[in-house]
Amino acid sequence: MTTLAAVLSLSSCGAVGDLDAEPRSDSRRFDFSGERLIVDSGSNVRLVAGDGPGLAVSRKLTGQAAEKGNAAWKLAGDTLRLTARCTGMVLNCSSEYTVHVPAGVTLTVRTQGADVTAESLPHRLTVRTESGRIKLSEGSGDLRLRTRTGRVDVIGSRSADVRVRSHNADHSLTFSKPPRRLSAHTGIGDIAVTLPKGGTRYRIDGRAQDPQTYRVDFPSHGDASHRIAVESPEGRVRVRAEDPGAHR
Image (cartoon, rainbow, N blue to C red; front, side):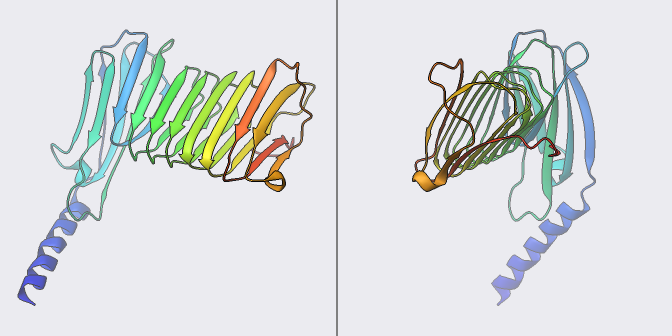
């Protein structure tokens, strides 16, 4: 009983420290003029287009992450490393970095369990996660997205070339402009693709768990220059036309 009380007391002290830590928000500008940027992050990452010289990064830290020495950002060559440490029994510890990506830069983001979001990004973007969610809104650059178990949402995309691959995750991919090439594959999970209505002809290839779980609203034309490939051997596939009244 004494040992249990001691453990609870220590845990309680740690939790109180987490809750009492003052939230912190700050920003930094790095001297960067390259054409390629790699972001390695242990924290959630938000990507937006930059509007000035160099590489601007801002962050929001709460709880243990906000304590001195527990968060770091460093640019070495073309690699930006973003970290925030949460250890022990933690009730409050969160971090999010916002990266303002310079114009003309090809971007790669790598995380384990952290989420990646992007808004109106025109850059060519590669994202690799293990379990982190990928959510990209209204972008126009080519996309290469790979995750093991993180959900993938692409919303209102104008990207011409999109390739998505996962081991066990759902994909929801909507386009405001017809993609020239879309390839989406998941081993286990559902894939939902929404394409804009219009006169675009597609070649559509795909498969799902069985014929009843594979539904496509568009005819497939073997000679079409716009190509769609969707595959989920252990899930459902749905390719449909955009609802003009839907709000994305």
